[in-house]
Length: 263
Image (cartoon, rainbow, N blue to C red; front, side, top):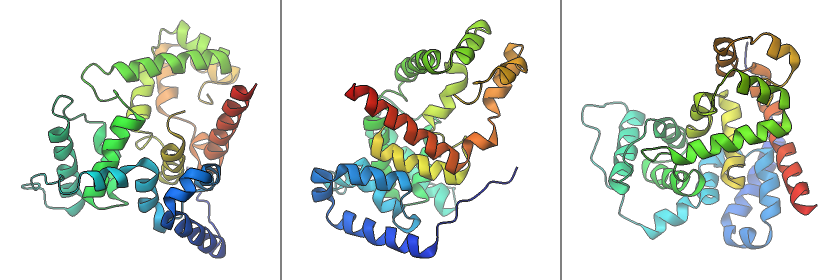
């Protein structure tokens, strides 16, 4: 199926760019007094021309770079010739030097690649540091303790919001770690269409970490065994991965979370 791209009218895009430029140029003031407004603008989508800069501000990567000026100096990529591949090698190598006790994890590569598509290597490195330390702490440790814990949290959440899917997965003895590891560890960069990845990351950097795959009885009837269930989880319905549907659902989840806290 072809990906349906959401076209933002040029005049709307220019207005958003102007608003984001104002925010970025007075970032500390906005963060201190108008964080709700930043959240709403992230939900609408960061303008493509400013996405790299916005991600640096949202993640704290910019501050991290300023606090560690001159410390990003990894070796060049040797025989790797393409610019993105060379920078990817440099960023990942720099991280292994920065966190030798943690080392390199394969799932960090697609995350670093997305960052490098939006910013230079040094900025991408410090954003990667923020993702690994602030947003997904413990995800890339040797024993993957954090990802396993989040898998259990996901399973408990599934029991609450989609009992049918929960009962089916439990019956098939399919542990969360079998299907959600790549989703979470790669921050959906290898799962969703590109436009959806960008919109999810806009909110991910703003909100941090916060079940349509098996949510209906019709779906479950087509997943009688463990193999069929795993195939359903690996090949998600294109509809639920599209930008408009996915962003709306994420926003609804965030709203419900806030309402539950206020009750």
